[in-house]
Length: 466
Ligand SMILES: Cc1ncc(COP(=O)(O)O)c(C=O)c1O
Image (cartoon, rainbow, N blue to C red):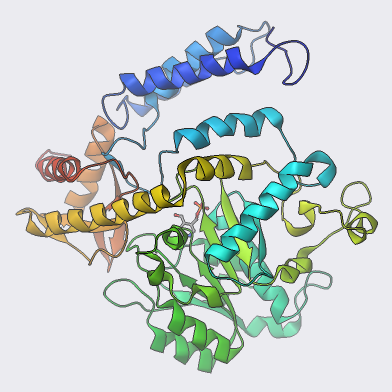
């Protein structure tokens, strides 16, 4: 019965789940590259031909077969070593499977009476993460849909720390408030400034060194010259993968009385590894930290965490509703996560994180993160040794920035040709005003040989007319 409800007497989940899992497994087995390379116009026409809601239901077997043929066969496969453009991981099988339970049980994280065990599970997860990062026992946090949302919440708390604006809006002096970050910071910092009413021009982006890490003396100058309410350091920048000098940034921010937000969307996972954790030295001084589980923790999108040093800071956004998270109940000890979140209804994403972390264990996860870093380093060396490739910046973490011989138009053409043919999905960005190719290596099972073959593919694509 296709209208059966999970948990109802009409049917069980197992059969439907097996149909879906079978479709994904078959599509993955059929794929011979990171994507099919079907012409986008053809793809659009085929998708448009699927009636989103036919008058009479097709039944699950047919609906899933259509999905398999028209969508799954033409997606990208982040587990393919030639899929290396973005901070876009293949999820752990354990996390993807547990995702089924997230949807099926549909716990709603806004209130305890919709998610009792789930509420405690998410709360425990963020407190554990705070401890892993070295934050004090007062730390707390909340899961969000991604790094963009976590950065927004972190900067909202920073703004409220400068002066409470939730009730009355921005004071006149807010015109002078500044957020200092580096020019390599993610664009979501500017977007947050815009959404917080400060305007993008409130963001001062100081320069970086050759590795793409924040220049602390430029930060200090900005702190002396401006009314800085927040400093945003990045642990793992999007392009260079650079980790800002967190300890020095933290002490500069503290001296200036500014909130320190660390965008560790990428690098937060380094805390899992005894070998890599020292590269986050200083993160424990942060007021708030973004960690994206859907990057180097191999979770399905969208799963991020905003962790705060002092859980009480989240009180700045608390809003109580008579129907949902009554203040009287909370005074009696009820924990409603809507009170600390910018969302109301929200998925129980903590479930898949907990299941897959517990199944895999810290040692194995750390080894996976370490492997990606080692692979990026080896790939950087292979680029440097390649007769037709140029390494554009030293490799810091999991990204490799390079150019193939030729001008800017060649770099653009190479990335487009590889994508259009379905042979590789590589990144392209601009570094120091030049078009630059980028590999982002989040696949711990890829080999040096896979990456050498990818580099050769890139070099050979440079001679194909665009
Ligand atoms: C450093 C950094 N912060 C934040 C983000 C935004 O994360 P999300 O795409 O999960 O919103 C990204 C995305 O790549 C990033 O690289």
